[in-house]
Length: 114
Length: 112
Image 1 (spheres, chains in turn green, red):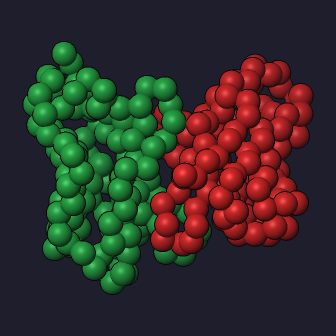
Image 2 (cartoon, helix red, strand yellow):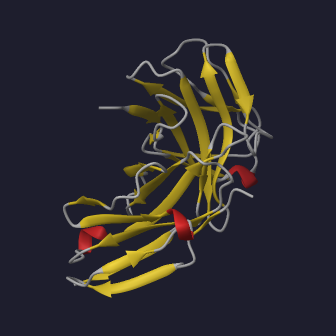
């Protein structure tokens, strides 16, 4: 199987709260990549980050950080001190290993209230 | 910066009236693809192209055609649109297999 699972359908937080979006993936590969995308209310899909299976170090970019753990097949995304502009649907994705496409999770809708 | 231009952004049409959604890129990437996004079904690949004159079906190709006559353009053609093709469509490009996809801004199509 090649599923990407985002179990959290919707999360609501108040501004300045930290929030973690979960992503669990299935893979039989030893080498693979994972991605996160953001889809704001305007509808476009914005690439956020790519990680490869060689590197389990956490990645931090401003208020965003990603925790990649091969042992649990998880690639979680944390927003620190959330802001209203973070309100969006967030997708985790991985390349398919037998067809040329990205497999997306079902997305987590994050609502940040002022 | 990768730029993928889709047109139009919004389109309302009637059943059976042929339409084309255009997609062009400024990165000279060989790979281009089309996805549709539907509530509850997520993002599904329609067609993809590995190079000029090389196209292949994705997960949901029925009712769609594509062409890749030149590297920068990859139009999506609906010969006879039906209401079940009402969706949000995205064109995407990437540099190589493990590169991220970069998406256009989307085309919201409504077929009545």
